[in-house]
Every structure is written in structure tokens, then in C-alpha cells.
Length: 319
Image 1 (cartoon, one colour):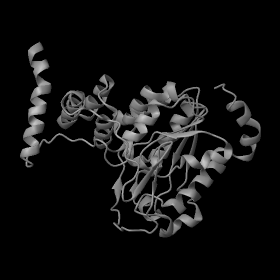
Image 2 (image 1 turned 90 degrees about the horizontal axis):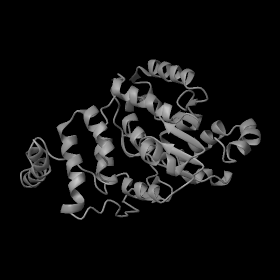
Image 3 (image 1 turned 45 degrees about the horizontal axis):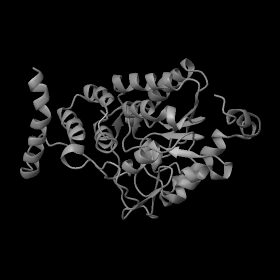
Image 4 (image 1 turned 45 degrees about the vertical axis):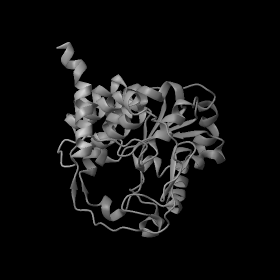
């Protein structure tokens, strides 16, 4: 039995080589090493960063839409630990790995309802490919239940030995995005480039995503936590069936875990964002839209009363 376990990584690597040669292999090993989203940069920077004021979590609606520079005027240091299609399962992993080191005073977590309705496989591949092997990643593999996830994790474990394992190679710019220190990915597109009418999507919250979300809320007790839903195109928001049930679920958690705030920036939508002028695709704001949203976000999180009376205590080092 022990021999079988020890042999499995080499079997996986053989399958990987076979897959590179024969592309029709239906069970290819997935990876996104140094790929889209700049997660390699973000992980490297997170490992070198301590004691931030604000930690941002979530999917691309976090790292492409919440600009860490927006908090500079408040004199606050923000770090964006978003990742592509980050579901609660991956957020829990990142919180376990980096919360104590980053030690934020305020956490902003984007919780798009669609992320509770997907397996988390894409985001797992992104994290396993760029963060390096961690034994705690096994929890995600078991929950997701995809054999390709096992293969990806094994490749992550073997990669330092076989291919050098440079998970943290820096890539600061693509033809569409620029990585900004602090974890934000600024898109350089200014015009709306694609139009793919969204079909009606029925949101069905996956039980293990809900459990992971609730475990993470428990781990974040004592922190000032703000849950947000970033604005998307109103036509697409209206086609998500089940948003009301999702909001009821979130409100139930807020009642259970006291002190959490929740802002849905689709209800009401910031008036200017009804125009495609502020989007570069179906879900993501361009930089003009980012600036509008971030102003509304800051105004909501740091309202007049909070800014002048609570913030001095909040940022004195006490949680």
C-alpha cells in the first residue's frame, strides 16, 4: 500500500508527459502557473507583507474592481488577495494561510452569489499552480471531487523537483492588464469590447460552499468585516434567478455573526453604471467604473460618523 502511494506522483507525472504529447487525453492535468490574474505576484507579495489596514478577498470582482490605491487618501494600507473565480472554499484556504501575517483591521470580502454555485475547481487550479503545494489543499480536492484536482495537486508537489518550481516569477503586465503593488490588476481597456447576453442563471448554493463560508465567518470573528456585491451590468444582474434567496441566506449569517456589514451595489446601482461606458466586459468595470465604484464603496464603509468617531479606535491596533 505504501509503495502504491509513493508511486502515484510518478504515475501522475507520466500522465502529464503523455498528455502533453497526446492532447486528446480527456483527463488532462490542469494548471495556471504564472497565468492570468497575476496570482503568482499576489502570493509572493502576501508572503512579504505584514500588518495591513485593509484586506480584500474575493474573485476577479475583487482584484480587478477594488483598487488598493483608492484607500491612499485615507492613509490606509490595503492588500488585495483576490483570485480568479475565488469561491468560499478558496477564500477559507487563503484566510488560513495569510490572515495572521497580514493582520488586517478591516476585511472587505466580495461575495458574488454565482461563486456559491460553482465547484471551485478553476480557482483551486489557480491557487495550487501558483501558491505551491500545501497539505491543507487536500480539503479542497476532497470537496470538489474532481480527479483532475488530484492530478493538479500532485503536479504542484512535484514541480519544484521536476521543473524548478519557480511559482513566484513576476509578470507585471499583459496586453490587457497591469499588476499594481498591493494586489490590484488594472485593466487598460477603456471601451466595452464584448456583448454576450447572459441567459437566465438559476443560483443553487452548493452545501460545501455554504459550510466553508460559515467556517470562514467564524475564523473572522473579532475583525471588522464588510461583505459586498460588486456592481455588474444591470441586464445580467436581473437574469440571476435566486438572488433574493441568496440575500436571505447572507442576512441570516449576519444575524448569527454579529457586527458584519453587507452592501449590495446592484441595489440600487450607482446611476452612472447603467451605461456600458463604465464596463469592459459583461461583469467587470473599466478603470472609470472602478473609480466610481470605489468612491461609493469608501463612502459606504467609512461613512461620516464612522470615519470621525470609530476609525481612530478601530485603527489603533485593537480589534
